[in-house]
Amino acid sequence: MREHHRPLAAYELVKLLAKDSERVAPQQVYRALSHLQERRLVRRIESLNSFCLGEEGGDAIVYCSSCGEYRTVQVGDYIDRFVELIEETGFDLRRTIVELRGKCGDCTEAAVLESSS
Ligand SMILES: [Zn+2]
Image (cartoon, rainbow, N blue to C red):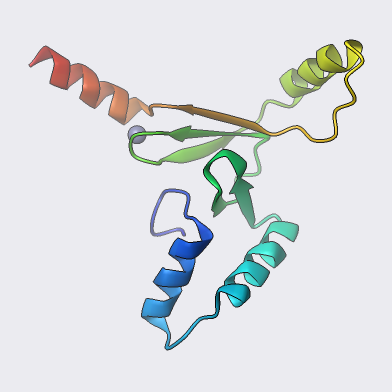
């Protein structure tokens, strides 16, 4: 995961691990991912059905739809306020996931350069 710098789907991890070792059962990968998620070493990006390293520990995930770069961002107070606003409407939130998609600085710059040439 660290080498790829982008979120990876479980099936991609199965393929990558199969290259390095003789045989990897998909169930082994799913179990390992579940264990790593519990330890917060890996986190799932729900909207991509993919996994990324969880070492940064931010509340929200921001990822680039062009190159796949991602980062986590601490937005604690903002999420708390957002949840309060929703709950004031009477909605009983069970789970809050903040995932934001856009273009990273490099991809935005590349697009600007391409359009100006
Ligand atoms: Zn990018």
